[in-house]
Every structure is written in structure tokens, then in C-alpha cells.
Image (cartoon, rainbow, N blue to C red; front, side, top):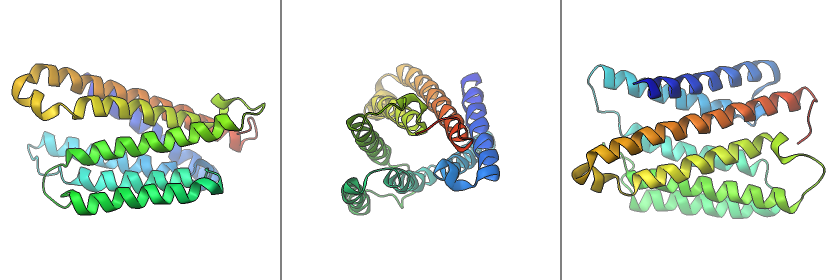
Length: 215
């Protein structure tokens, strides 16, 4: 499918870009974003390989990937939040992980759809907290020069579409599979836009490390 190829290509380009930047300036130069991209690319390639060989026993991996996303982006945002937000961020993380441990079967063999929805809400909470922090402290620096702006926009955009697709997914699977396929295509488009936004973020990280912009 062409849309899947485009999506994987954009993700691959992002990962290579982050690897090159990490090689030049170190992982901290991009707030360790390379770790997230590399894990995401490996999982996507593995999943597509399993589908290609006719094996569909890998859905459980996305449960652990969802937990990884929550932990990673907690670490990502807590490094850029003011100290007054750190306790709030930690409390939200503990609530999320506690809920996952008590009320989801993340250890099962099937994908837990509610895990994906939890990840989306976590992304939105952190991104909105960052926007609140950034807009409350306006200065002469352009917000679009800040790589965290592009990361946050990408996460919010992707999360909204994922929730829109995931909530009615099982109902549509039984009652309107054609529309579910349309939503799947839209989700791939959302993925492409999100990773396109991440590429801009990596460019901004690169410019910042070269001293061309301030964030």
C-alpha cells in the first residue's frame, strides 16, 4: 500500500536525521528523541515483516510500546518543564501507570485498545501543559523556532485522529468495515503529518545546536 510506504519512509528519514544529529552533538542535543524514533521504526518494520510472512502474533508488543511512550514522553517533557510542573507531571505519570497495572491486560496476547487511548490523553495533557507554559512566558523568541512546539503539535494532531478512529473501531469492524478502512487510511495520513512535524523539530534542534536560533 502506497500510503504505508510513504509513512515508513518519513519515519525512516526522521530516524536517520536524529541518528546523524546524535552522532554529531550527542543524544542530549535532541532531548533523546532518537530513542523514541529508533524504537518506533524497529517496531513498525518488525510488524510489517510479520504481516508479510503471514504471522499476526505480535499485537501484544504494542501494549509494551504504549507504556514505553508514556514513560519516554514523561522524561521528554519533564526535562523542559519548569520545576513547578515536575510534581504534576510525576503525579500524572503515576496515575497512568497505576491505572494500566490495575485495569488493563497489558501483559495479554492481544492489543489493549484503551492503552492507545490513554497514550493519546497523556500526549494531549503534556502538550497542552507545554503550550500553557510557553504562552505564559512570551518573549521575543519565535515559538515556531522551538522544536518542542513541533513535537507538541505533532502529538496533539496524531492523538485526536487516533482517538477518533479507536473509539468506534470495534463497532465499525462489525457494522461498517469499509468506513473503518477509510479511517485507517486517514490515520496513516495523520502519522505522516506527525512525523513530518517531528522532522521540522529535528531541524530546529540542529539549528539550535549550531547557534542559529534560540529556544
